[in-house]
Length: 613
Image 1 (cartoon, rainbow, N blue to C red):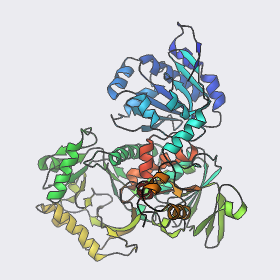
Image 2 (tube, rainbow, N blue to C red):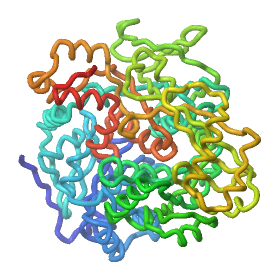
Image 3 (cartoon, rainbow, N blue to C red):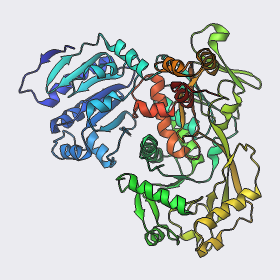
Image 4 (cartoon, rainbow, N blue to C red):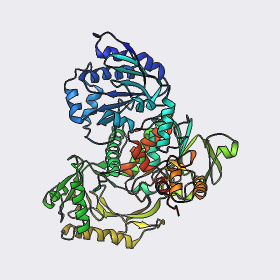
């Protein structure tokens, strides 16, 4: 593929050549967020990019920067050797956030949300080739990187390219064909990210719905949020305290990659909301995880040995060290997550929605139950859109619909067969008395126990599959106490655990078999079953599905199946879904998005020619 070159004078400083992009970028992205890619390998690259970003921000543009560098040590070295025009550079803000050397993109929102920065470490071509986008492309400018054929699908029409002071005019004649090639290879739905929506409805007022409302309004979308209860977080997201820490596994695979990035992003969102003036009760006091029997202890040892986890993510501690960290005695060695802690999920929800309301783009409908929704294509012969209905009639018509309603997805015809299961959980409230106020970290073993907040601790939680009632259970209350006794059998502080007041809260969590959230376009289950019945099972059927996406319902999405880790996973999952819905580049790879797709369980079976029964 040929690129035409417009050479600048060799003596022209790098930041001046960067500023040559100012006017074209301003003209290209007046009404949307402009996306730039920077491959930083020299100090002048950071200086030029920082100057350009600040000039674009001054012109009123909203920006996204995909910053690619080979490693964290190299990025630190580049920064140390860079002379910036301004003391408080964008890259100083990045490094002050102390990013870690991790796989997948780390997203930060800087400059009051006007600049989103995705940090990608590793080989630049491999990293960028793993990222999806919509058919219209996403990248407006390539800085210090001449994109190869496999990356041109990410470019918007008219994308600019500047490398080593030289402007390159990209040949984008094959861009759309390359995108379709990528779509077929990854079996992506055809309609996702292809519609420019004007209105979006979200069903659900818990952590998933609140994070979706925040993510979409930050992108300038008009959103209507329907919450069935009279207050936000009236269902599973209403606990007083919830533990927040990364989910690690011995395999150190995709599940770990997602949850580490999701956990860190959730922390950043909480801190940003608090900085914006919203009250969120929380304490990043650390989480101490220990085994409660030989099998669980061996699993924790495998986890800590599986990878060279950064010390700020996880580190091994012996029982004595753990006791000093916790402030109470424990019986076993374990893993300490120093950046973890606890958060009030209900206050997190309220803060996210309040921030979204400040945009003027969110209409909040509390105490409004959605009983059904129908495609406008069937009602009015419109190509896209959904009509929502409540007990008293039509609630509205919307271009897109996101189901973020926890167990509520089981009530709708379009989603009740999705592979996700309800689990009842009762969290016990324990008065802070005796030695309990000394607790300094969240304890996690067979159950969990939080430091005191407003005179009590949270202890839990029960885990009963299929049970969906919300009534108090004395058996589950005693079970929560027994979990603590089994986890720390030799500790006297257990005598201070008092459950006699029968104080507890019950919620129903939706859980997937592989523990990933369920995020993405909702499959058209009727069309899928018709195709499945026509193809049958076996090798021929497996070949049929190799390059076919599951049929989907255009404009219908879900964020569900968060289990007991919604406060860790919802913010980043919502951010990625919002990017997908607009055809933008998310911070996570296509592989991780595939791992969260609502129809992934079915697709895995179909690709093997297996039965869906």
